[in-house]
Amino acid sequence: QVQLVQSGAEVKKPGASVKVSCKASGYPFITYAIHWVRQAPGQGLEWMAWINADNGDTNYSEKFQGRVTITRDTSASTAYMELTSLTSEDTAIYYCARSRITMVVVGQHWGQGTLVTVSS
Amino acid sequence: QSALTQPASVSGSPGQPITISCTGTSSDIGAYDYVSWYQQDPGKAPKLIIHDVNFRPSGVSSRFSGSKSGNTASLTISGLQAEDESDYYCISYTTTNTLVFGTGTKVTVL
Image (cartoon, rainbow over all chains, first blue to last red; front, side):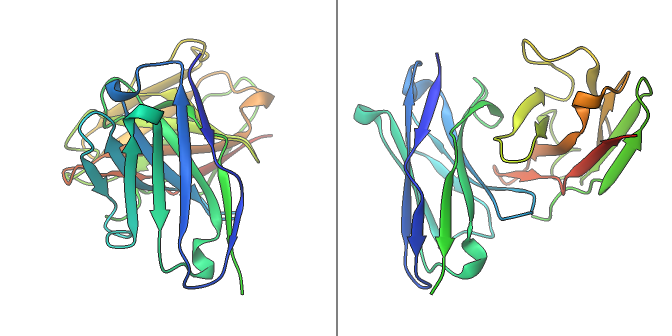
């Protein structure tokens, strides 16, 4: 069965960076894209970026452009999201999600979420 | 890219139909048939209930249906049930090769 398993919770200080991993299993990794979505406490869902797991092409929300980098390691079937220059407003649960076969459509398979807390 | 606009809350009695709107622009909803809807319960990951405007993934109740007209997409829940009380989000692909979520709608079953 399709599974996306994310790395554990992180606590970071303002100005630091965080890197979250998303290990995929149960399907051919390069056939789909991985999307990253975050949700601040009590807030709505916010789309951040996506990566074509086959060729590594990325696209970022304008809001995060320059601060977020999405990468993947096809040999490990793992995608990564790195966010820099953290502020308290980046405190959120970060999710990875697999696309449908149409890569620009986020699908039904999501990771369990990674809580990133930014606090001095 | 601004968030798509959804009503903050919608309510209905059991058995009634409700519709949630999701308004965007000609650069997102109006440009492609790549609109999806998610249901999210507190503390859980979102669950896909509609993709490509009006397609239901396997296992999703037929009480959920989607549609689109111009720059506005809609999710209809026919025969509202207590278990449908949740948060709902639309999401659309955009002309800049990015995606954007809606602001979210809390559905209350009276």
